[in-house]
Length: 272
View 1 (cartoon, rainbow, N blue to C red):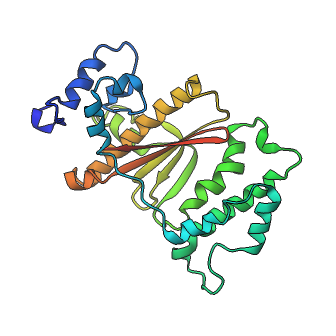
View 2 (view 1 turned 30 degrees about the vertical axis):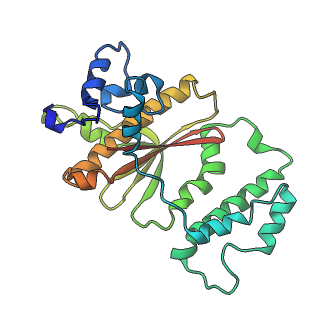
View 3 (view 1 turned 180 degrees about the vertical axis):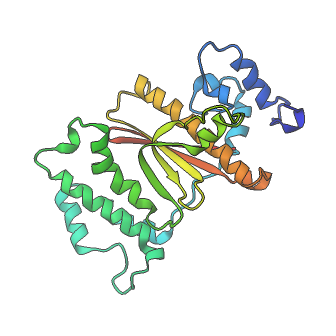
């Protein structure tokens, strides 16, 4: 790679050189081999000084602020301490002002949040305590994450969440970049969920699911995180190609990943 194409930090160090030199010393596969700087990984961040880490973190785009109306709709649940108190709030208040006509574009997020609370209110009083029991991954998908994740995108017409071991077309594109006519086309990495446009097959995010939380350093969780990050990187590269790698546009791109482990969920973002 030519020096002009590398990321030069204020310290005078090139990010790519630091990653490459360390990656050569590793005996096992690392996200660094895919040019991914994992800011949650101590081994990676320790390669940089505190000032350099701050400079890298400063490039990460901030999470958008929620609308005032959406925030006010959620505040009404803040004082509830019991299921009965929460149910009383649900029965006596609404996600929109009483004299305001319903507008799907304006009220969708607040209505979605209310429906999530309503769904889980039924589980809170469940004498069988199903949420507290061990289940397979599919149970959590159907009973927990569908109402929280899948339905949250109901107002985005060009994005759908494809679940159940869908193959990433972005990863397939990377694997077949140098494919000859005589070679069999390689499949993309299978992932538990992919945020995809049904219009042009572009991919914007991924989900990996585990049936239980075995700790932040659990083997299954670490493997799922590694798999998720690599797929997200492939998606980011594909999106970059879609915008012809124009720097201004590429700097605005983000790919989102969700890691479900039983009832827990962690979100991560990959940017250029």
